[in-house]
Image (cartoon, rainbow, N blue to C red):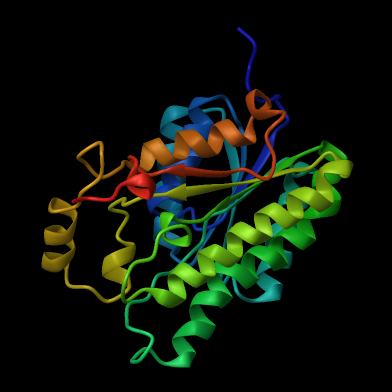
Length: 259
C-alpha cells in the first residue's frame, strides 16, 4: 500500500507535550512517520508524548527541545536540533498556543501581548526559520487555529483576534510560498477538552459544565484525535493540491445558530 509519507519525512510539532500536539505526534506515528522534533515547555509532558510515540511506532526516532517558544533562541534551537539529527525538515505543525479569558473592558493589554506572542509571533518566527529547509523538501506548514477566529465568543477577544491573525498568516504565506512548492494550511478546531480552558484560569467545575452544555449540530465536543487526523491529512500528499485552506473541524459549530 502506498504510504502517505516518505521514509525520510521529518515532522516538527510545537506544543507537543499534551493535548492536540501530543495526539498529532501519535497520529503521524500511526501513519508511518519515523522522525520527529517534539517541543514544549513541559519536559515531563514531552517524555510522556515520546513514550506514546514509541508505543505505536517502535521504529520512531525523535529529538526534543524544551523552552519558551516566544524566544527566537528557542525557535533557532528547534531548527538546528532537527537539522543536526535528521538533516532535513518536511512538515512544521505550529500547534503551541495559549488562551486567556476576560472582557475587552477588563482584560489588561499585557494579556494581549502574551497571547499574540505565543499564538502568532512564535509561529511566524519558527516558520521563517524553517522556510528555506521546507523549500528543499517541498514541505508543508499546518497552523492550528480555532473556530474562535471565525465565530465570536464573549470574554475571549484577544484569543480570537490572535487566531484570526494566524488564519491570515496562513493565507498570505500560502500565496507567497506556493511558487516554492510549500503548502500552508490551517486547522480550526471547535470545542475540544484539551485543558487549555483550565490553563486560562477557568475552574475545572465550570469547564466541565460548559463542555457538558455545549451545543453544535453533532451534539458533542470533539476529540483530540479527530483534530490530529485533519492535521495529518493536510500535511500528506493526499492534500497535494490544498494550500491556503482554513479547515473548520468543529462539529458544525461555525454554521450553527441555535434558536
